[in-house]
Figure 1 (cartoon, rainbow, N blue to C red):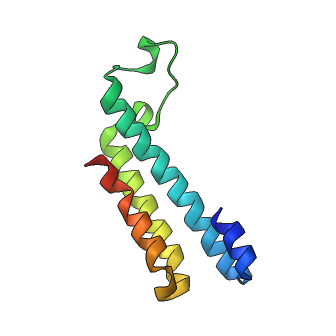
Figure 2 (figure 1 turned 45 degrees about the vertical axis):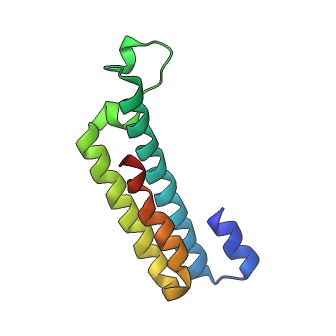
Figure 3 (figure 1 turned 135 degrees about the horizontal axis):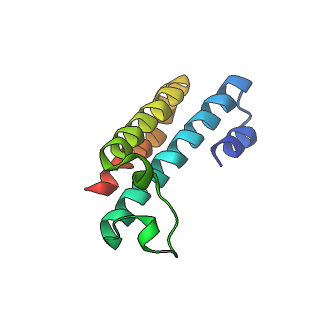
Length: 103
């Protein structure tokens, strides 16, 4: 969706790449955070205990590593947005708010 916005706004190839990198990183960071929240809510020890539930990121790498990876992805997204300078301030703020969902 970020890339589409860039296309509509006439972004350069470098700008489109920055938006794609940002979108991919943010999407995965959001999903990992969502998986962490779900794991905290459902209380299941592991997916094998509940045949109706899919594996989540924390099931595979653990909560600590999941939090660490989500933070890294947010940093990657913000680094990609640096291409746009202050014009990307709102997107940077959005990116930085993703880990706050866990608190």
